[in-house]
Image (cartoon, rainbow, N blue to C red; front, side, top):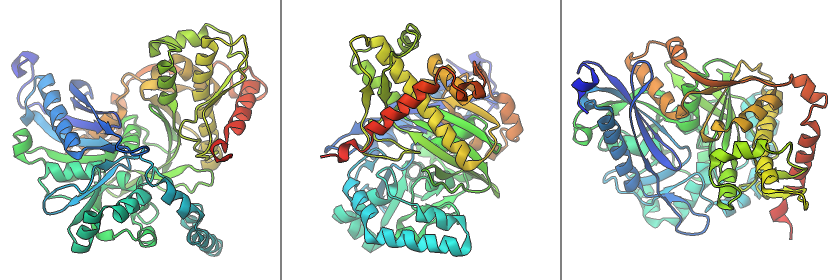
Length: 529
């Protein structure tokens, strides 16, 4: 479809935004009203070369990225020269190393789901070194009362962190070790690799939101952690420079898309979704329910020091202003629904809402959604997924309802710990992600939280957030107040009872307590003989 037929003048400009997720790469072309003019997506092929290893081929990812950008512009009927800027949102903590001179990767992307460093994680967390570090940091916190020392005294490594997966790569890939010695090695998360490719090797950089999700970045000092890098023997020389989230990172080489497009934002996916939901104020909360659940609260200009396992992140840095988030996550949200579908408890995900409401309750059946252990506040990687309370009267419908209820129950658990730890009054809650299309989960979550929850009209918030930041950087949009006016709400879920009614013994009080008992029974399962 031609530009003229769409009624656009060639002078009208648009913002391109790409989200590189765990399962797909999506590109949208946005206009001034934040409406999508064109879209294109492709699947991300995950590779499983050994049990527990999860990789992505960097060349496939690059080809997919170029394909979706060209496809979205073609779908819009516009021309590439009308694209004023490019924003990129990407999955966090997936990394690669490559030769800085040739651009040749030393290995595939090692994704955030990869478990190859599990033994390293276990041995480091049990080590005398870590016990000493925790002891020294507790003492420093006692003497100085600085929260960053309290945070350091609570640090434990996980496989989701870049840190020990990178140590594994440095220990096990000889050509990578050699390149480090030669000074010819670059490290980067997905955003850094794409930036390197788009600028034909001219720029090696990341932004604060992506850096803060690696666990080798000090969010208090706003720089790579010399302490952690020294502790783990990670050379600082291989790490990219860290820039503002809104920054002119470089320009796409004209040989790629035919024109030079300014790259105006790099952003980690959950932080980008937070920005897309316009959660700009302290106390704003976003719940993303996709493969897993990510609940983020805006904590303002100070990082939150958590005792229960909330993760302090840099949300974004624009100009001199830094916004921090505290994040809790629950793995296995969409994964539990997909598992139930594979078991043929239902054929279409859209049926689950009707199935759940076709029975009055779950008949005393409880589901623990811990296929990847339990995260905050229980923090038990050895927990197992389980159904409890099965009896002869249990039907498929009760099982489906128990699975959906467990997602809302985890939402309540995360929300309670967030309230208790941050002590920040909640200003608004917005939900996104594929699972939030389920009205049963949304309504039950609103009931349990005792708060209204807004659901946007479209759910690709990471893409929108990266577009918003890129557009602010070029003056396409003037300020955050203008962005708030562009936000649309598909549905508002109001709690059907007041929170105090639920706490005093509402219909779910006993059910929640029984589910929490089921959680306790599932914990430490894989450490039993």
